[in-house]
Length: 411
Image (tube, rainbow, N blue to C red; front, side):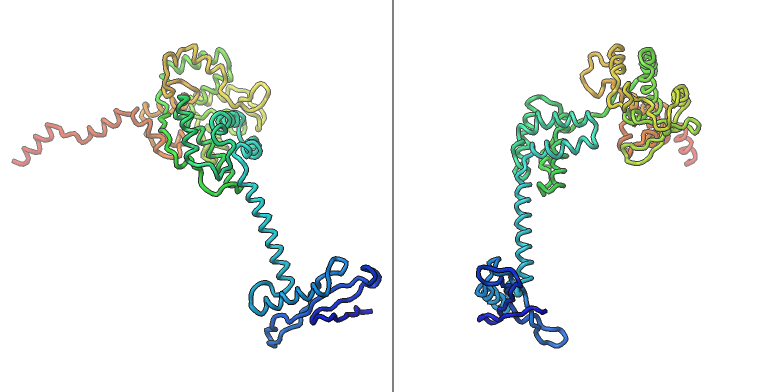
């Protein structure tokens, strides 16, 4: 049996009654409105459109329905606002959505630097950064950044705040390098916050001038110093000796050596494969006979085993203390205050490149062996080949006898 519609006293408003449910003494009524819809594109005639408004038990009345119908007709007449209930609901839903977005946006904008670092940045960093890096960044934030901008939302942090952080570091007589590290930590937190929608602008550190840092290593070992170092290391710790010798004779970085697995070493072909280098691509390190002997003297493990793990079997992250102790005992750094002239583990890689240049290897091949991304990184070794440069200018030197011969020929 079909629904029986009952017309109200208001034109365009009608209802039907629920078969069983009551509202008060009467049966519950469902109200609808009927009006002229959009024109049919084929006939040009307007179609009758009917939309439901709700039950009397939900608060709907004939009078309210007539009011809604009047609003729609007026909107249709003047061409402003929704002309159907569907459009009105869509507009209202969109309004609520925008309102929620605005509240969420405001909530994000009010998150302070300290809150974001604690709740978002630090937990994310633990998933992909080394423990030592996390420790250093935590120190930068707690000692220098949070005291200045910790309670500020990102949108309120300006270049003036960064200048204040810089001033605190300089007053504490921190090195330009430390200042750069602190600013780098701030910038990384800022960039992640920008990605997450807390701020839209670039890091204010871009507007602050930082002191230049000359951290190019000048110190490299003589062959005699290298022999003393390796001999002392071998007597103290075989693994530390091997790591140092590999760096010295291949130019490998400390982290690359720590990451080495046995499947990366091919003594038959004479190379080591670097799977995750700084250049983000697979690279190859070539062995000389000395380096090859170091690898072949070791007992190979499973393909996925590390060559130099810690005593607990995990990957190393720091230079073995044995290395630092031996350098101290040999007094390589005695009386030296300039970091560029001190001996560190990285000095071994620097020595490898320096020896190559001193032996007459051209800078192009040195760049390839060091796996430098640009030739500018290799130019720091150019001064070690003065004889090569001198011979180049001597090639066009005007010889007295040649000049005399030319003059004689002219006569």
